[in-house]
Amino acid sequence: MEKANHYMYVVRCADDSLYTGYTNDLDKRLATHNSGKGAKYTRIQSRRPVELLYHETFLDKSSAMSAEALFKRKTRQQKLDYITKNLTPDKE
Image (cartoon, rainbow, N blue to C red; front, side):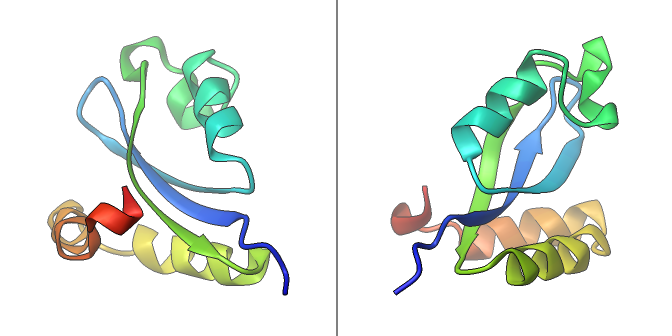
C-alpha cells in the first residue's frame, strides 16, 4: 500500500489571515513558510510566523490538490466552520 504523504494544509498567519496549500512534507513546508522562502503570500513579513491550523492526509498528490482547490473556494467563515467540524484528536 502506498504511504499517505500528501497533505492539504491550512496555516494561520500572524495577521490572522489563512493560507491553504499542498505539500508532501508538512514540517519542511512550515519551516519554509516561516523562513520567508515559502509561497509569495507568506513571504510578507507581517504574515509571519505562520502556525499549522489544520491538515488532511491523502494517498496521492491529485487528491490533495483537488481538496486544496475546493477549500480555497470557501469563504473564511466556511473554512473555519469546516476546520472546526473536521478537527478531531486523530487529525491534530
